Amino acid sequence: MTQTDNSSRDGDSLSMAARLFWLVLIIATLYLCYFHNLGAIGLVGPDEPRYAWIAREMHESGDWVTPRLYGQPWFEKPVLYYWGAALSFKLFGVSEAAARFPSAFAALLATLAMAWLAWRVYGPWTARWLFLLLPTTVGMIGFSHAAATDMPFAATLTIAMVFAARILGLVPPTGLSLHAPNFSLYTNTRPRGLVSLLFFGLFLGLATLAKGPAAVALSGGGVLLWAAFTRRWRDAFRCLHPVAIASFCLTALPWYIICSRRNPDFFRIFVIEHNFKRYLTPEFQHIQPFWYYVPILLIAFAPWTLALVWSALFGALHTWPQRRPSDATLLALCWVVFCLLFFSFSKSKLPGYILPAVPAIGLLLSRVYVRLVPQEGWTFRLLLLTGAIPMVLLAPVLWSLYFGRPGPTASAATGSGWVWLLFGIANFLLAARKTAARQPFALASLSVVPILAILLFFNHLAPLFLPWDPSGKTLAQDLRTAQIPPEQTYAAAMPRGQQFSLSFYLHQEIQTWDQNQPKEGYLLLPFKARRFPVKSQWTCSTDPVVLPASGWFAYKIQREDSVSRRHDGSGPDGSSPGGSGPNRNGLAVRSRQPR
Image 1 (cartoon, rainbow, N blue to C red):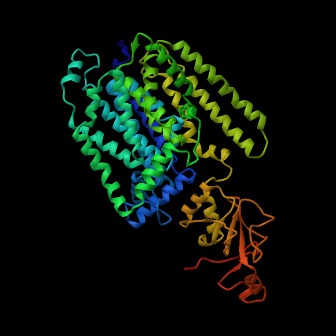
Image 2 (cartoon, rainbow, N blue to C red; image 1 turned 180 degrees about the horizontal axis):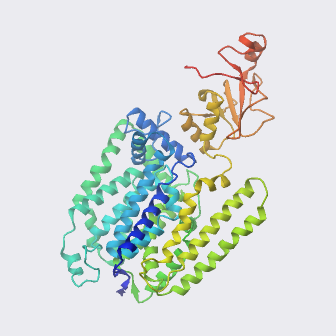
Image 3 (cartoon, one colour; image 1 turned 120 degrees about the vertical axis):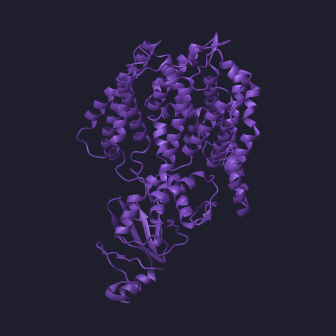
């Protein structure tokens, strides 16, 4: 078997104007994809508001060891994201953008690390295209805008694997090609730098602080799978150098040890329940089929899904059966394959689990695009145009079908039309790559512009898909305007994520209404109710407080005897004692008073 020549580095002879063009395009791409509109919508889903609450509580309490949710220890995830978000709150104030900044910054670091690896191994053109293709994928944009642990974990693991590539001797010194006559001498005799070992252990430790021992399994599994194909076992075991082990232990272990000493239940809850049981049993109800992550990856690489499919097919055909990929390419492949298999065997599957494989796939996609499209350009253009034409034609069809129709369905169709149109144009431009491999001002490089346009005008597109705020931000503002005290507010028929989000924005845990343990207060419902979940000794007002911006309604819950006393005139101006007065709907609303 011989290695293919896909590891030879690309030359670079761009003019100053061309370099400036690419620099501006790359900077615009990185900013718009990772940092623009971080706070465009409120914290959504069950994870974002919970993780943001824990980080805020860590920032306010000064306890940087024990994560706490609503005052109680919370050991679902390790501490790295909480540290980053708490520091972000300290620097920028408490906001959605500050809560999501650690993920955006982590995505930037992962992209820079992969671009550096692409530049050193494959050359500047692969690095340039990685800067364009990887950040503009749905997966990288979405998770960089999520206040969650997925992107910090994927980023730190990615950087660790980049340093592993150096330790394995896959990254040549500056100015030396992988096919230079003395490169084999370099890989066999030059000692691996202590700096690479130090940073490999450091970032692997940070990945362990981001999500747990899965970091060690993914890193070790990818390297060992690579060693099995290359027979370079000696190189693989250099990753276990004492310097790397010491760096890893000094980074990861202190928090685990201190947290375990302060919280005796930590090991059982985090390691046993949230790692081993989550992986080995369906206890957490995230059950999906074995092939679940294949469509997830295809969706994650939109709008470049067709390019990814073509790259996978022709990349395999190009190296089969006489030749095999270079050792550097093989490491990226083993990284992806092991990550895919590892999480496919898990009994608990969520989309974010596969994120560590996305940067490596982006590297392979960029390399195939630079190397193989000039050779097999007609098949590439045929596939992309076959997909792009229906995307472009779908837009006017949606607009004509729902033109002039009111309602959320018509709005969503209008927004979908714009997205499909811009996705189609992006694929048209990406297919414009000709046989010239190194065009200074390639028309295909403008394929990211439609995606950047979607991000730039996201504030105009989002209301078309989300007529009501899916977070609790707008509802919290409505409750403050109506002067409804959060400590006397209860939720019914509210999505779990929105309830967590409402709790974050009100800085008060909003409890679910329990009709078996009723309390005086306000019951939140997303509709005008005819029947209420209250017992006979309690009464619920039939005239709710309308919360117009969020579309919710607040019903006053009281004891029947307190209502009787109010009608008997026991309070001033016919209201119950405690300073309540009639609001615009005739419902008595208690003003905020210190408890």
